[in-house]
Length: 343
Image: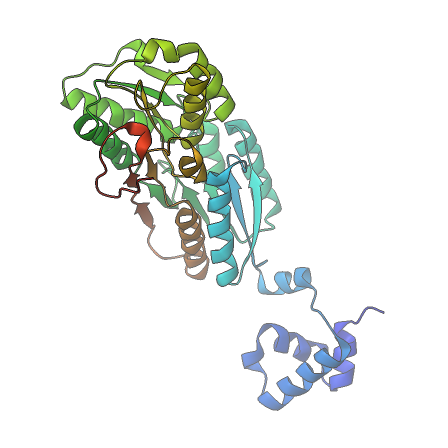
């Protein structure tokens, strides 16, 4: 039989409102009454209705995390860090994904209309007018992950993508003796790809190098796509001092496997590097030189910022930028440096 709040009140010989105060605002009830009510709750095995409690407190104690995808270690690490921080701060985390800008717009619109969450952290892979409008109309606390949205008040946590890519480019040119670097990124509209490609171009320009049209390519961050692309193009890229800079580890791994399928030796005939430092970077043979992104910390920081905003809606906007770290291994054919993790 279901136990109700009135059953607790009857056993404790108090009013229903007193039981409610013990559950929701115990500091308002004297110690003797609190103890009697708690004893009745324990004896009856009563569990408060979370939905009704949320209506009373005007909060659900649930927060959301919206990602572009949930496949792969990159996103699972963000989720892990976010979930641990949410639980630590007394919130339950609801996770969803939106695979393209239209999907993101629809999902954010649903969040706005239903208001089942106290706040939401949103990872924005592509900044579009639709997404900017959706976030501007959200009317609940939110944090943007991996981007900043012009014209919309929000907190954010980002990775210094350009610094990570610049460190990689300098390592390839100065330590590995690279003469030609082919950049393989994600979609042209992806904010991470744009930042990493910008750093690639800036460092080459500093050295008086102009990349050709065949030096920059846009894929989709997937292993399978990069593997097929590598099998088609790698023979044209082979040469002493040549390197492929893939914008994530999955694509770098796909290109390395394509090289082996073509009997092209890495790094002897062509070097390959990646970005993110997921587990695949250590499993690839040879182990992958990459840029370590603090994925779990990014998720945890986003939730921490969101909870601070929930606790104090009037605090100034917060911007947190996390630093990536160059990790040098054998796939680049060069010496180790700062942040070396050679294997």
